[in-house]
Image (cartoon, rainbow, N blue to C red):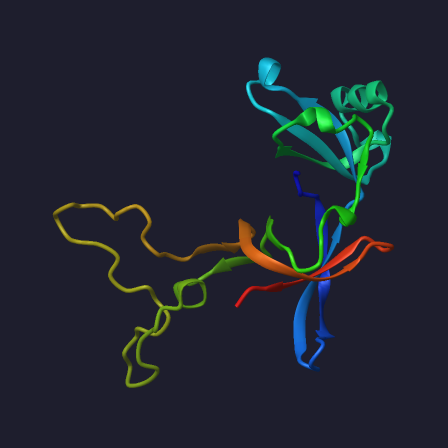
Length: 193
């Protein structure tokens, strides 16, 4: 059975366990997601289902997306993602998937976009030490030497330099679902230690 949904991080809080221990958790609002399309290996080359999440005004859609939602008779959705499945025939177009496909105590991988932090120097971005603060060193927060001289006469790819920090796709694996609220559609997850 496939278990995957599109959702949104709501925030963080804490839950008290059975023995009174404090468990820090991340609240994730997962679903409801609607099946928009089934992809079979004989037509597409792979098997997957396409899910839609969060309603959007029809005027914000392109003509091709408008036609797609009109054809399958589903309200337009803001986010459309594909999930690989073993048997797409187990699902129907228009079927709604909710957070109840998960169970408490199971582990999930969560993918998302990290917070964008703008342009950052090497000390903030990579944790460089920096130079002496006083005695006229004139080397405080600069990156320092970044490459060799005449040979190879270039800076190697992957060199840690200042640049855009955050705003990247990040995956956190093995988050334990501590609590499920099926009425609201929220899962409370904690990272496995």
